[in-house]
Image (cartoon, rainbow, N blue to C red; front, side):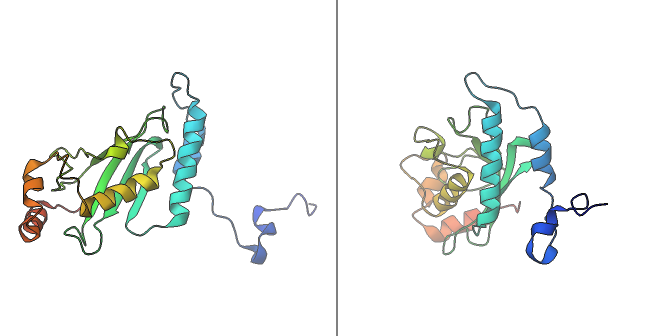
Length: 187
């Protein structure tokens, strides 16, 4: 066998370190046929989401994470931790993110999976956040969405509440925190 035939990918890496194979969901997503949307290249959606996943993993922002659910690159599970010095500190919330084949030109559908007592979150987990609706831009990504929701926890928009009880109670942070703790169920 010649040197070329025995050439491995790790031969070009200093110290001979082996390169880890891509996570199964990336390999599976690359092989999985994606439905095409009218006027949208399904492969570009796939590439965009794979790129966002890699950027999210490499960046390692504290308190946020998201990964595809199984082999479906269009359905993700995310987590956000409550911000420091907020009534949500120490709590972890699970989110579902569902992308259409029109992404990034249309926002994903994002919902809380575990109960979140908050002025801008209803009892079904729906979120009232402008960037997930009329203020959406194709420049936004999964990281932006997660950081925005994490920020929303500590700074709700009481002018547009989905949960009027939470909005009314927000001014009394001590009572609000009691309600958050009462309703919180870990992800």
